Image 1 (cartoon, rainbow, N blue to C red):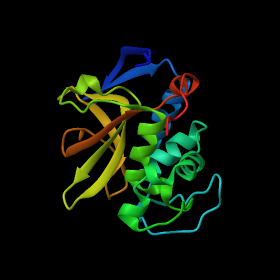
Image 2: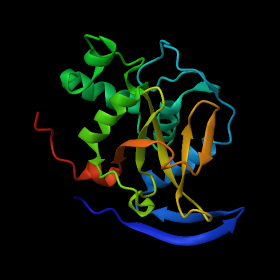
Image 3: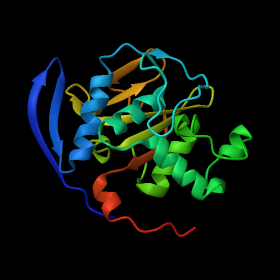
Image 4: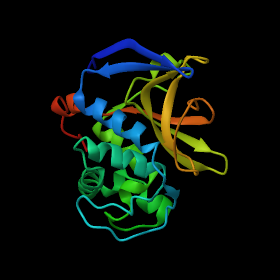
Length: 210
């Protein structure tokens, strides 16, 4: 496993929340900053299929689902997940669940990156697939977490640099239906994935063996 360096210094305590800084990788810092900023914006939950430009395409900024918070936060830090996912799924379509879950026969850059199961495969293939534990200390700033909600609904969010003083758990930036929120919800639902993606990992990445 490639080590990732952190600077975890308590900087502030306000309204029951500790703010931590930061991450040795500026990319991760920017992703987290952007994710937190998105929790202050008014976004209506809408996951309907839309044709969007490629690359750099997006649905209207006042609309979005859980994946759009991740996509927009990554894009603010210089990584276009629409492009990255499309290139990866085009390289190995069978590695992704598009045919099994949605009956697709080819990649679709309008929607592939906006689906949680696809992002899970992307982060496994292009980042670190980390253990799922019940220890909040195992979830680092910038880590991506996926859950299964009641009704078998997949969900995704990002670990931020803010921590609940009451529980000691890191706050998660996510959109579970009522718009982007910053909440102490890491262990509220069954965790199905724990991933880490950074420019440090990409610099040291090895080619896929598939």
